[in-house]
Length: 127
Image (cartoon, rainbow, N blue to C red; front, side, top):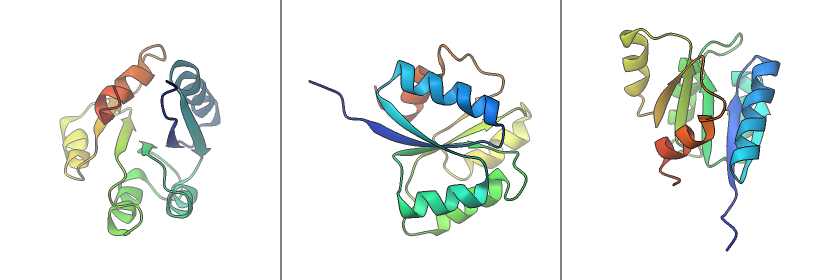
């Protein structure tokens, strides 16, 4: 039986990194990845076509990850979508701040591209 395809919304303002992540996820798992490069675009996309999960970079120019998380959690359409945070910060304060938003997990940058999809699957319970 063919596993069901999951849709992941990838929010990262770095196009090259987004391409690497998208390639990893779509090559190693039967997932569709929709990529946006701003928090504003992510909020709009998530409300129009809610994904199964959101991978969110914290540092973005227009709407940072914390602002986007707040907006997602306040919307009836998006409040229950699982979110995984990408962050280059390893400070406990930063990680703990996002865990308060009931995110599915935090993945530090840099990450291992070969194990990224499996790590995401474990955090989301998609195994």
